[in-house]
Amino acid sequence: MASHAHQSLLLWSVRRMMADGFRVTGFDGHIDQAGELNRLPPPFEVRGVRPDACGVHLSGDLIGFAEAKTKNDIDNAHTRAQLRVLGYARMQDGKNSCPLYIAIPRSCAYALDRVLIDVGLIRAKHVYRLHVPEVFLAH
Image (cartoon, rainbow, N blue to C red; front, side, top):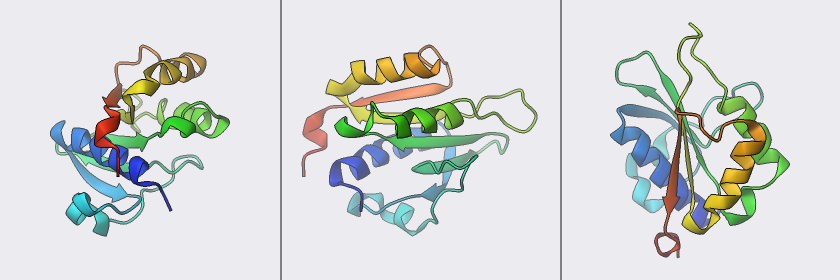
């Protein structure tokens, strides 16, 4: 079961996706504040990787992914593998990169920088970082 901090971060990333025009179609977890999102099925797998959430843009021509990373889940092989798949995913036409929303505790911004550098996504315009103050993650 995911921690409260992880689920809070996931909710932040999903809300940002929704604000950018995505309809969430897959949500992995449960948090009281998520309401109807809790009833969604888990996201689909992309090349063996399952994002924390996924959605379709209201225009219908773009799929996006959301990830939540707690302090101890940023700098590891699993996260790098996820980012190598989700961060380089493209739509079938090959023209558009799939947006990736990553929510982390604000104090972990430099750790995420290092990981994004390692996987070649540090300046990727389709990767949206949300640095959430720790006070919003306390239970």
